[in-house]
Image (tube, rainbow, N blue to C red; front, side):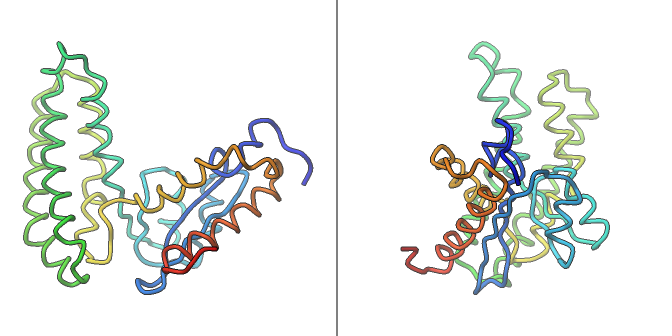
Length: 233
C-alpha cells in the first residue's frame, strides 16, 4: 500500500496490532498480526477456525467470534483487579476511607492470586483440583459480597463501576476455574504487546501496512522461539 497517515505510522500496537498466544501446552505459539482495524470482522478473520476457550479482555471486537464459533470466554482478571487498584492509587490520603470497597476487593484478589502462585508448578489436573477446592469458595464469597455492596447503594462512583464490571462479567472471570490449562489472566499476551511497544520508536521502516506486517511476522517468530526455549539469535 501507499504511505500512511501520522496516526498509522505508530503501526503495530496503536492501530491493529493483535498479539495472541495458543497452541498445545508443549508447543506454544505466539502470533502477532497487523491489521488496519481491530474490528469484530478482523478478530474473526484470525479466529474463524478456532474452537474452545478464548482468554481475552472484555473488548467487544471478540463478540462475533464468540457467537459464531460458540467459544467459551475466559475474561482476564488482571483487567478487573486493575479497576480496583486504580481507585486506591488515585485517592488522596484524606480520601482513603472512600476506597474501602476497592481495598476489600483487592484483598479477595490477593487470595485468588495466591492460589495461582501455589498452582504454577502443578500439572493441569492438579491445578484444577486446587482451584475447585480453594478458589471457587473464595469467588462465591467475593461475588456475594460485591452484590450486597451494590444492593446497598455504594455512593463512590468509581467503586460502583468497578464492582459492576466484576458482577457483569462474574461468570467469564471465573471460567479459568473450569480447566487447569487456563490462566487467571491474559498477562502473557500483554507481555508480548509490551515487548513490541518498548521498541516501537525503532520501527522507522514500519511506516506502511506492509512494514507493520513484516514487523509482526518477525515478532511472531522471535516470541514463539522464546516460549519454546530456543536460542533466539
